[in-house]
Length: 174
Image 1 (spheres, rainbow, N blue to C red):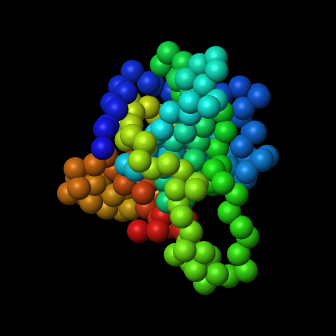
Image 2: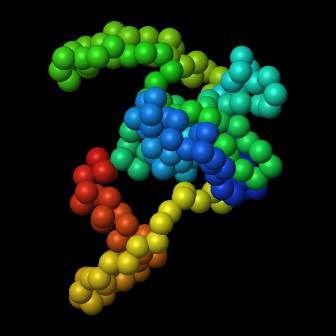
């Protein structure tokens, strides 16, 4: 599989027209849409049918909560502009139970939803998720524990604390 490395893409471009559009239409926040770009499993195919004025792409990737999303996006200089984000390309039926959903996917042809053969893996090593700084007060013993464990894993302790929060909030399936 071909891999495309894009170190010059640095951030996302949002405006009032596209900031909440995916949430209103598909229930996907702009933060969730951003997350898939830094996923280890992010795949892209060119959207030739909709690339009139500029190249458009369809990306498939996982959020931090490990939910698979599709995004339609374009690249403008060093910016990613997300046009739309959704859970799927083709409408998936509503299921009455998880058992019914599993049965559907065991028989469904995923190629009706996306052409995986033309996808490429893209990497944005310098792209940063939009974030908001917060201050939390923790006992010094927890901070010390985080620093020790982070040192063992060779990772910044703030990143380890973020992982703990994500896991504790039930946003990760690991």
